[in-house]
Amino acid sequence: MGQSLPLGPLLGLALLAGCTPPVLRQAEPAEIQVAWLAFLSDGKTTREEVLLRLGTPSAQLEGERILTYAFSRNAAGAWSPAARSWGRAQKAPIFSDGQISSLVLVFAADGRLVRHSLVVPG
Amino acid sequence: MRRAPGWPLGVLVLSLQTGCLIWPFPTGHLLAGRGRITPQYVASLQVGVATREEVLRHLGEPDEVLAGGKVLVYRWTETRGFLAAGGYGGAVAVPFPGHRALRLEFGPDARLTGLAFERGKPPAGPVPAGEP
Image (cartoon, rainbow over the protein chains, first blue to last red):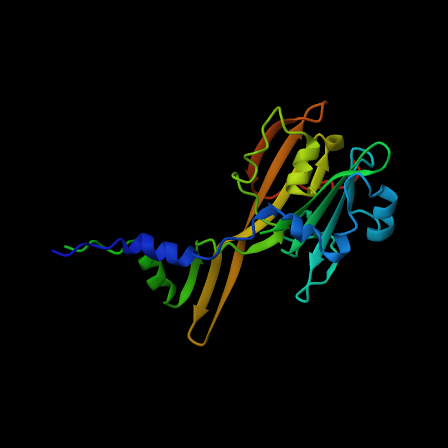
């Protein structure tokens, strides 16, 4: 009598293999040091500099203490601002491009950057 | 005696026939949103400890800001399966979406008071991220 193989579970796993959607993760420091973000320096960069270089933030929280920017990257590696759209299925404004990165900038009361992070799809 | 291969093989065989079939396997394609948020990724955000700033730096820009910033919601949509119809000479498969969300609530001191994963379509009239 031969050993029976669990074909059902194996087939299911084969169908699901490699199909995990992109998972959010925090970018490595090297990823933040790309050309267009290299000017960001905690304790030095001011809110004014950020606004002049990156333009209007996509969101601001806690007054102007926390600014966020949403960016998408095209196939050539170029970055551009991203905006949400009203999806038919979602019935809510949501990003339709799965390659959106989110830059979060936290400022001190004097307007200097104190902390920042970049959240990217993994 | 060999065991039957199981229901997945049966579904696969059925899908090769003509007609209509719901293919209930999540392919994992992201249909909308910035990406899936896993329980493992938010495990470091402890209720009563994490601040709104820490949450934002960890998860990025929320999709909804409610109640003056006391509630942040992150949404994404992924493929839950396909509705497939076909016959000789042609076939079509339409994905059906699975709406997912992570809802985080904060107290007056801006510390995290609740964190919950949600499923289903969002209620009508959400408030886009912006000035709380």
